[in-house]
Amino acid sequence: MSEETKKKVIGKINEIKSNIESFISDVNVNDLRNSFNLMVKDAQKDFNKLIDRDLESMKKKLQKEKEDIERKAKKFLDGHRKELNALQAKIDKLIKKNSKISTKKQAAPVTKKAVRKKVAKATPKKGFTAKKPSTKKA
Image (tube, rainbow, N blue to C red; front, side, top):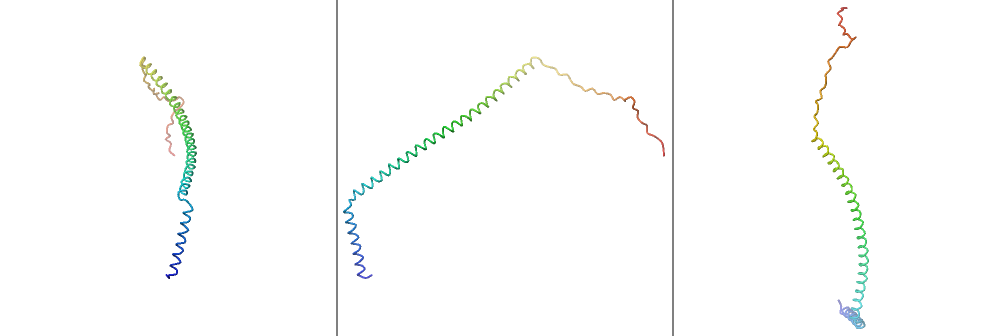
């Protein structure tokens, strides 16, 4: 690089440096920092409000779903409880019936008669004669 270009570049850098220093002196860094912090706090408040509102709506929705599920579960259990009670009543009825029958059997035992089949003798029918084989030769 030539000396002229070096001097031009250094001159430009010094010019930029002086522009930055004049800008910084015009704007107070503390004011800038405070305004930035204030903007961040405001944004955080707005964000928290949005989250709280969404959170409340989600809580309401979940509570509604919970109540709906509890209602359905209760209905389901009540239906099965009725079925079980009906079955239990049938079982109790059958047990009572069987216990009455068994007490009757114990009170008066019934003797069984032996059932025998009568075998009828084969009798030839009247008017029926057996044909004798013919002995004719042809």
